[in-house]
Image (cartoon, rainbow, N blue to C red):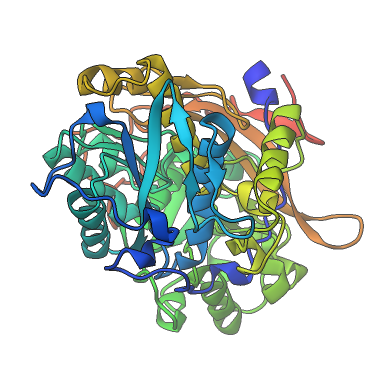
Length: 493
């Protein structure tokens, strides 16, 4: 339990920051990378391959400044930068934005030079264009990122085809990038979308009495993976999924998809894995078509948060929420307090997504999983470099060092499985009304040590999560009935 107690919960207030944001970057020139002028061009060797590993780290960060998750561009660059500042002696390029990068990072005598920041838009084509620019034009030999599901699959395939490259995934939550692609130079120090919903179906069926549920999820790899975890969990304990609806990512009018869902008197509950700009829009469409929300009839993945109450009203209270890279709720620990304080010491303000992309204390961004996923990748890079004495000339040894890491992080330890994907604890929470009538997020349980096989549900030989997979089947899961309750912010073990 020492690991579980190194956790906190932070009320997530995702508001206007989930809106489409395309500021601060472009797709095809060095200036768009958001770097100061003296960092804009670092030439590779002209061969179309990353330079040899023995010449130091030339780091590229793959963000997403356009598309449904474009509002998190500042956050993800900030996460990697904070790790370099804390543990590699870097100096941020600005006190008011992370997009100006950093200078002066060094580990065991080996410099870490930021050569560029890529601008994705949630599509595989765009992120491949950006990684090629960073690697083949600017000479990056290490990549941190990307952010989103289909992007992660594309970058894992690119890494597999370019074995001289090292990729530390940012926060992309699709399952396939590690379980199916299995690139030996691609590492993910966080969970995937299925992992983050472990235990939620068990809680809703056995504690809240849900027997039937309708699922609505974005029709792309992360939405599929997130829904797959919930479906596998809910059905394993005897629940029934009556319908599955998959609107395309980036949908603006959800009315036709809401019409496909059963009415509230025909099902015990609804599970939502609609993210980005779609979370609020889809719920508003539900209210227009089905009537007012009853919070305890709804559950969602990481995009359910107290900020929804600002648009939908307090009726969202009662909804259950799956986990993410950080634990929501009310647990406070010295480790997390120090981490958040380090962010506030690194910058004066950051215009992150949770503050509506307006200047705010950097700890606001650092508390959410998009920032934190890139932070863990940066910490892994530093620790692996230290483990090999700063010598990357033997990439096999360097990659073996990364694979063997167990990171002691603010929100708990993370190790990697045999496919170099994170084994993590999952925090489940609920939206509740506090004493002042505000909607806040409260931790209700912790599911420890979940890996991407999901108790044997998924493997390299099973289909990728999709519209029809997994089937709704009862099975034994190791955490059924074994989640650790959290009461008033304290794990009960």
